[in-house]
Image (cartoon, rainbow, N blue to C red):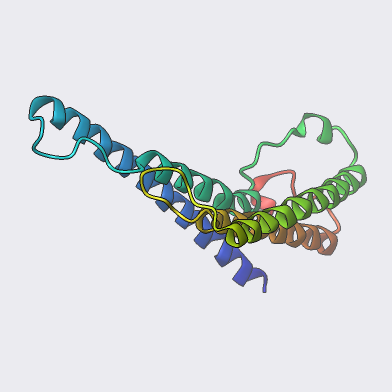
Amino acid sequence: MSRLLQKLYDLCGVIAGGLILCICLLISAQICLNAFGRFAPGILPSTIPSYADFSGFMLAGATFLAMAHTLRAGGHIRVNLVVSRIPLKGQFFAEMFVLIVATGLIGYATYFMGSLVAESIHYGDVSNGIIPVPLWIPQSVAAFGIGLLLVAVVHTFVDLLLARVPILSSPGEV
C-alpha cells in the first residue's frame, strides 16, 4: 500500500510540474501575441481569452497537487534548529504531536474545500472571465490535492509509529 501511495504522490507531483509548464507556455504565447500585435496589428488576435483565469486555475492545481509529493520528499521548509537539540525520544514525540495537529488542521481544510466544491456545483458558480468556467472544476483539483496531503500526513504518521524513531529530521528518511 505504501508503494502505491508513493506512486500516487509522485504522479501528482509530475502533473503539478506539467501544470507549471503549461502556465509558462500560456503566458509566453500571450507575450508573443502582444509583441506580434505591435509589429503587425490586426493579423492575429491580441489576446488569449481568459488566459489569466486559466493560468490562475493551473497555479492553484499545481500548488495543491504538489503538496503531498513535497511532504513525502522532505521538501517542505522545516525548522530543525530547535528540534535537533532535543533528545531523540523528544524528537519522536515532537514529530508525533506535529503530525497529529497537522492531521486535524488539514482534515478541517479538506472538509471545507469539499463543501466549497459542493456549493459551487449547487449554485452553478462560474468564473467571471471571457470564458465562463464552472468553478467546481478547478476547486475539485484543489480539493483532491489537499485530500491527498491529508492522506500523506496520516501515511507519515503511520511510518513514524512503525519506525519508533524520528523520520522527519532529514528528507531521505521519509
